[in-house]
Image (cartoon, rainbow, N blue to C red; front, side, top):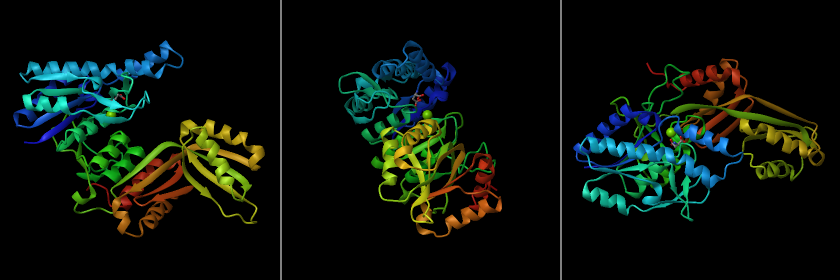
Length: 406
Ligand code: ASP
Ligand code: MG
């Protein structure tokens, strides 16, 4: 007997037929003698529609009322799935976040889960009643409904798995696992059997949008084994696990890319103490996240060029912050470029293998692709290149690191 959390995303519960299909899938685990807690998303498209309504109702919607509205999508699917299970003779009931409760911070719209009371879920396991839990929502300290940010039902599922000490958290979605890279641009992308939490975090935050990043962080902290799999096919998916569980580790596990990048260059800014702080301090104050940074050495010891990247949506804001500092910073010119993409090779195997950067740069050079900015961490190397070369670069790297399917 295993204890499982089964989470179904929006496409898996998109209509009544699919909800009925999900009920059959859940029943199969029950019939096999497993204990199951189910977490559901809203039907595909519903949350977008709800968000749209809040924007139509108010120019800047009160975040607490926004949460009341957008949390309702999951309430519907939780009730419907409980009905579909009952229909199959499986005792089931729905649970809203506030009923368990799933306690969150009061950051409405992007609340963090603070604690989950597993008492009622344990009672359900004891009595054989399947809990169908509305994902994405919880309750803030004042008793008001909160939501966890878009894609947050993954995080609900992992948090519940940690709270009930589940053997595994299965995330059913519309893809059959995590791939070595985006299969839409590399036909030879391979499904991974296993990936480490750290690699998955890099893949998730670098643009492979399979799991909400926060859910992976949570899984890593609580050591929850997560499986990403398709709700439409009956195949094992990709296990996201601790490094120790992976016997034969490849040097590079995947190639990710992110189009959500923009580059800013300040030409001829003073090369003296305090300059970086006076550029990046005001950007942080304006809530602009800076990612890659390069500063050249100055030829003459007085001025240098500074290049950095920000999210594409923040480019205008960042440029206006920097322009406002023109008098103080005394740079010659501000250049910006939104036509860039960040391509990364990722793998925990890099920690123990030299030469990954060289192989990466050589593969790009061979295709005539110019590298604009480089950044590295222990398990990844990222380069910024012109957006036009995205596909060429990802394909070349996929081949260079031996990831192509035969
Ligand atoms: N329904 C919410 C959303 O679309 C939460 C989720 O599906 O994970 O963002
Ligand atoms: Mg999702």
